[in-house]
Length: 345
Ligand SMILES: O=c1ccn([C@@H]2O[C@H](COP(=O)(O)OP(=O)(O)O)[C@@H](O)[C@H]2O)c(=O)[nH]1
Ligand SMILES: O=C(O)[C@@H](COP(=O)(O)O)O[C@H]1O[C@H](CO)[C@@H](O)[C@H](O)[C@H]1O
Image (cartoon, rainbow, N blue to C red; front, side):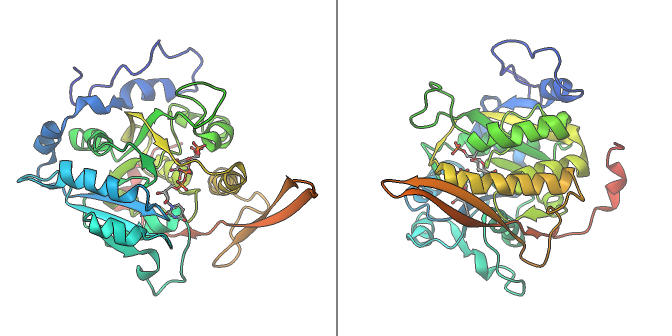
């Protein structure tokens, strides 16, 4: 049994030689497993820390109710709750997500009802940014609402490193990601944008972050006073944007990752992931290749155009242009006075 902040042996064999500088030591020092912290241990570590669980949800009626109920049943009920509030940001759903989440016991807030003084936003990142204007916790746990066979261990696993080590500011989950119908076999195939876009980009342009097993994981937890000091890409670029900005703000040693086991979720089409990939590229390149033509924002709601092609049965080749929003929300708070802590790079 590992100690509260002792790294876990999650690899089936030692790390390979030749990992980018810093990534190897970081992996060994800051990789944990959810098994280290059961609910009882989390309750002991929690003390007076308030915990907000946040689920951005767009048309998740099939799964959101079960997820909220599972969290409430295991981590909210009882004399010493682990979770103090469950917030579902209804992200323009049209399938009854809000009603189902509310019935399951979540506080449901519509994305456009938060900061109505600002131009309306769209996308997952906008929903997460707005959650920080609603959440009252010292720690926010971000969870996707499309996960099948959800377990409350995702929450306790993400909280473990944060509650066990005050130095840790942000924790990302990782897991096996078996995708439906893939030739790669069990435990593989999921995370197409991760494997084809995010991981190559990080290894090329920010190799210190090569130790993150799932850099785009939607399951993550962070201290809200830190999360409020970085911008949020409003679409699917939010995860890679947060990882890069938090790395710059607090440094690698204050980031961690935790093995959550296995994750199954609804898979989008390849064309939809093409738009997602465009947003991941936009958020990453704005941070890593500033000044690249076409990357800097232009106007309050910048959009890029993605031309995609498909063969229509019997009708030949069809081209379509998809609008890809690449807007960002600014930090809720100015950079902390302790910004001097930022690592010299
Ligand atoms: O505009 C959006 C797009 C996505 N989501 C939510 O963000 C999470 C991850 O999105 P999705 O499942 O589409 O991404 P994937 O897991 O396929 O990468 C899910 O809970 C979605 O409901 C959202 O709140 N608003
Ligand atoms: O990891 C990925 O490649 C994408 C798509 O996953 P799949 O190919 O559908 O398993 O999913 C992640 O990326 C999104 C963008 O960062 C996140 O918002 C999702 O939470 C995450 O599941």
